[in-house]
Image (tube, rainbow, N blue to C red):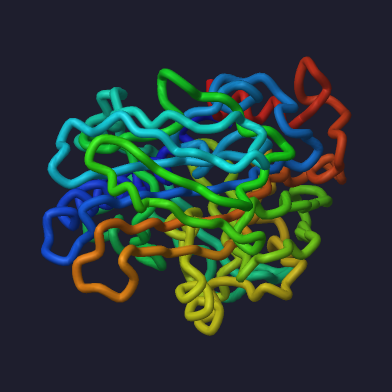
Length: 387
């Protein structure tokens, strides 16, 4: 599979991220907004058949920690930290003192973002070619009225907007960009250890940061367990996805993609039409509860879902992603005031990926079998996507 497989999803998610950065910076100038804002995004990523750091692809393996990996990275634990201080447009040098349970020393350095990222990036991206073919629902058979097809070669902006309309969290979280001080950064990008725990006392300091910016993370908001998902079955048939329920999960969402020629095949677990790109992100517990009632998100007790028969037949392979949404922690100081000095928002989730098809290798722990020089078919597909 090629990078075109995920180009449409990347475009949409990049646009959302840019909008959120702009919204955060605009919000920081509004009355009542804390003078100092701090975000922590926390993630646990896993892949069926892969241990943490189990493959060495650029940007995906052990030792390749970078800001934004909480949104998607190789197996392991990740944290994104983002500090915004009003009146410091160039950002500040800051320090996040961490509990000993993180096993990363006494603190992490926060540094102004120097990546040079441009918010106009999506404008220069190539328009996807071919069609987007959307299926949805946990069912053995393709339901009546499916699929929905969008020809990207002829689609109008309105048609593209309609195709991607669906649930979008709109949540503010850790972001990079002008004015933000972040970790990981160029100075320090240590991989979070597999035994790391956030539980304990945290303190943030730096130029313009109130001395009172300290908070405690309880066990209920620690790293979530890894998603343990399997997806065994031939691409020509229905593929059952099964997983162990994840402690602390508020709900689940499954999304799979494959490519057939120039067509990008998309399937989501939603019971109503939704391409799901806005759901491959942190979602607040309140939104999860609402979208579960609307049959877009699977409930916390769910542990299985069927990919309809034959929708990925004829593809080079397909990759499924299961998201376990987690809790959020919000703190302001002084609490209950109209103009707090600072705010903290911590978001937690866990995600798991699995290769679909190929009679059981699609979820078999430990991999094995052909498809790549190292004998693991998931490596072969991932190299195709990220080459």
